[in-house]
Length: 218
Image (tube, rainbow, N blue to C red; front, side, top):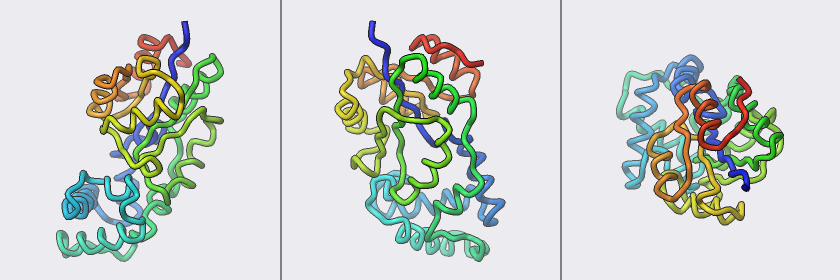
């Protein structure tokens, strides 16, 4: 029996939880998570898109998105101090000081060492690639990378799963997604994939063992 290919999300799986990243950004800039998320939603709403879709699909450059974020923050939260926020080069400041989730990076590496093909399937931004690639460098080589901004589709849209299958040369039933968002896991299952909803390291490792027979590293 062929081993399935395991696809890991970056944000919230291979990286620290998103709530931690938002709090770290607040410490760097003084912008509260709810303020930043309000502005992100406002920029996307003006384009009729989900919150981060404008940059995750490469429809706006990081610089233009940052300018729109700054304008939205000033309008929605006029008392906010934006002087420390480098919004036009958002990724550099967002990822500064961020380190990988060591258990999930170790799990990816461990899976590959045990004969599984491994990939990253992520909604991400072109200008942010140097930063997140450096964060997950300890994971080693990937068999495949599917990035929303490169393929023009983002999770939970079915097209990104179809593109992943085609790029890797695998059938839906031979894919397992590890993702921190339930809607992405549900979309993967509708496509015929197996999925592990990441909530914490221990449960994710146990579920990977159950659904894909990945030997535990814990």
